[in-house]
Amino acid sequence: MYKRILVPTDGSALSKKAIKSAVELAAALGAEVVALNVVPRYPRSYFEGGVSVSVADVARIEKQWAEQGQAVADEVGKAAAKAGVQSRATTVRSDLVAEAILAAARKSRCDLIVMASHGRRGIKRLLLGSETQHVLTHGNIPVLVLR
Image 1 (cartoon, rainbow, N blue to C red):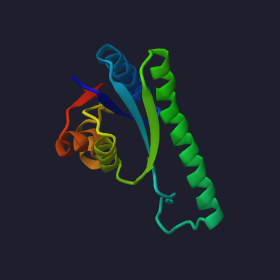
Image 2: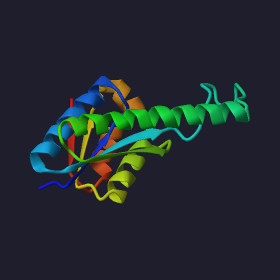
Image 3: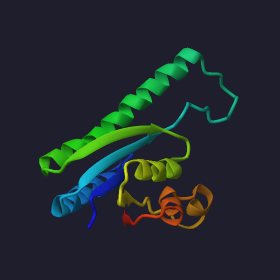
Image 4: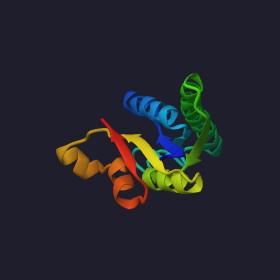
């Protein structure tokens, strides 16, 4: 049925639930798990332009984010290994999280995306949007959403 499952993760408790479900599903189907962590492209201040950030600080922050992102993605590999599931982990730099998820799914030839919904409702959802909703509406492969 499914051969390659993409699991976008940010290290949150809810995304860990998605990891667990994706690994269990992959074990049952004999599928591979592809873990993805999306890291921002560059640091921004709260008030854009209000605080200057040196080039050295930007480089340090970007390196730190990349290392943390890879560590988060590698956690999926550890969970998969315990279940006897083949996996690989990747980190992508992008400010457009949903677009990065869809691009990673295409690039890795995934046939299912398993991801968490952060469950925003009302005005928060309207104002903040939803990466999960964007993936659901703009993707062309099945998406399993966990709450």
